Amino acid sequence: MHNFLPYAWFDGQCIPFNEAKISIATHALHYGTAAFGGMRAIPNPVNKEQFLLFRTDRHIKRLCQSAKLLLTDINEEYIYDSLVKVIKKNKPKNPIYIRPFIYTSDLGIAPRLHNIETNFFIYCIELGDYLSPDGVNCRMSSWTRQEDRSLPLRGKISGAYITSSLAKTEASLSGFDEALLLNSQGKVSEASGMNLFIVRNNQLITPGVDQDILEGITRASIIELAQNMGIKVIERPVDKTELLISDEVFLSGTAAKITPVKKIESTNLSTERPIMNKLRNKLIEITEGRSKDYDGWITKIKLT
Ligand code: PMP
Image (cartoon, rainbow, N blue to C red; front, side):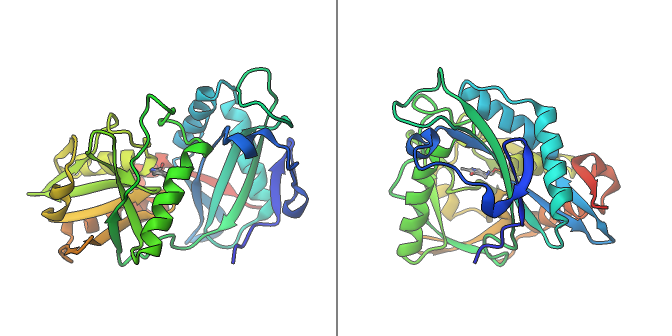
């Protein structure tokens, strides 16, 4: 069951979620010509009148970049103002996931990005754990992550999520929780909606931004945190068999936060995860507004 919050941002104002409707002929629905964001926000555990958003500036910037890759412009301040208005209007009580969405809103056929009207909306949904915090079993997907030469992978582009959907469902229907995708070079890219990290010999390794990954904001935050903790971070191509002999493997994303990988195909991984635990505890401390040194990563919105 989805718990949508009662108000959405639509056509430049807050309106009841149930009244925010689009036509069946909407261009983006047919061609995947849309870009979106995904943010988490939680009530401040020590002050319920305040909502905490994680790395708002980064999320807004990536959304603008995604829009640019679809040849449309959207103003950063406008997105910020709309986010604040929709959160204040909803006065959420529980942790939420926020979905800002920019799309070709013209009606009718012909895939294109020129001479076309675009529009923007935001809706919010209550969201607990997207993946089990105890860990997930992963399979190697039979689907390959797309290449940057066929699709702008640095954007969060709607149409790209067909591959994620196929991979996730394939994993799920074959008894796994999540899918790991190789890129067209045969190197590990990412999961269906999360970036991937491994730990080998106390070093944190993750596929670089040239490995057809989405440039995850959680990923960037983990890299920065690890470096500040004195953990060596290496961005480089990762082979499939390396996953199987890693000391730790974990996934990162806004929805998934930091989720350990318990098993890949038939290989069980260690349940000792000292580096992941350190990073996860720090990330939780930051998102809950308890870390003075990373206060700048949190936007505080007063609900009253
Ligand atoms: N890869 C994909 C394909 C995703 O959809 C996401 C979720 N946005 C991520 C990685 C992780 O990105 P972030 O940490 O910014 O949520």
